[in-house]
Image 1: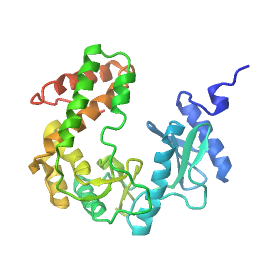
Image 2: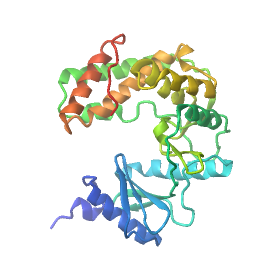
Image 3: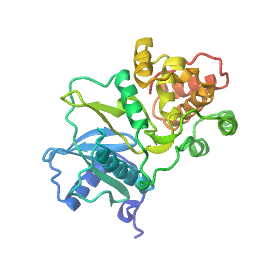
Image 4: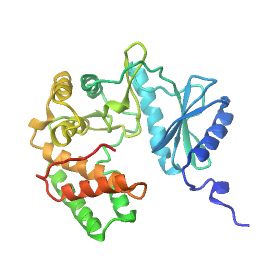
Length: 307
């Protein structure tokens, strides 16, 4: 009988049941008890909170993510050495382990308070992060601007072929715009996915940075464009929230001539990310259609829904 993907540790559908088994096996490998563990998220990664230890187990979708997992560990240790509040790896277990083709890392649980982080706090965290001297020995690469967008365009099924042609053309156009861009900030530490959802407020009111897998060394504008775009183009951020963000950070990216290029790239990536999930529901398919249609007209309103 030929070996299955599971027996070889190869690719298999990333379900909650599979993630559960990987978590159990990984905990056994490092000497942690997994009984009573609770799944708290299943997305790009699966996150489990252990009942017997104050530990979060993070499981990536495939071995292709092992470099990102190892980067998170290195960045966490560097930020800890800098005294910067961020997700902390558990130091007395091996990091990262690979179980059945899934990289697994172990993190100290942050005891959440009763509120979410504000945009003013996001501005302050980014201001302090960007002021750090980037580590010379942590292997930080430049920002992966387009991520997996081109691969998604090639592989996705269920979209009109005309959309695929348009998105490939748009990708080439955006790369040309980017090549002509002149940034105002020097290279430095960049989170790479700077949302308030990637901050956690603990019970003492202290704000911690989480999800370090896109951390890089590049221009600060890549972090600043997220809130500026969500306010200026999408209307997902209120004027008061954005004023708090810009006032705390000390810069409004919308005043920079390169803002148009960065928000166009942001919208392209948001559309291609959603595109890969169009088969999951009619709502997602409708949102994808709304987004790709508006990409064809830069001046069209962005009546997009979060998702």
